[in-house]
Length: 187
Image (cartoon, rainbow, N blue to C red; front, side):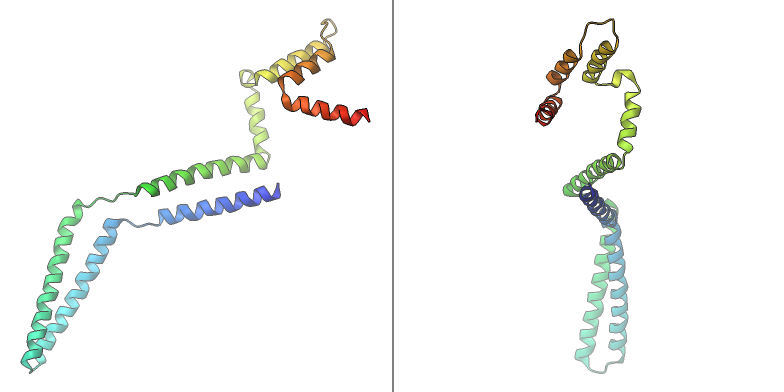
């Protein structure tokens, strides 16, 4: 039992890590917008440096290169602007595998909770509450209780042997336990 509870704890920990990792994934639209903003800021900073170099350099070749750098930075800023124009049409979509992982994680967490409840003894309480409603009691248990009631009632001719035979016929586990008990008691 300790080992099963330990494995259950490990399983719950893994489910918590997976769900937090999946919940921590940021939106693609937000990431694109943040990266576009960073690129635009860096481009404007570089453009300012190229302008300062072009104004302070006496060499014509360096001035021409600086002006090309300014044009490249302005092209980058134009590309960023077009990305921002297209951004409202971009949709965040969850990959198919992430949806499956999420559903499996939810199912696994539910199963783990049920096992945990059962191991802690709360399952027996739930079973008692369910069996307090008479139509939810299993038919086999109802038949066995009725047979035992007949045995206890002296007016009914049913015997203990009939009750045992009925239990052995309806429940293979009871039949195996009966045979085992008979072997142990015969010696």
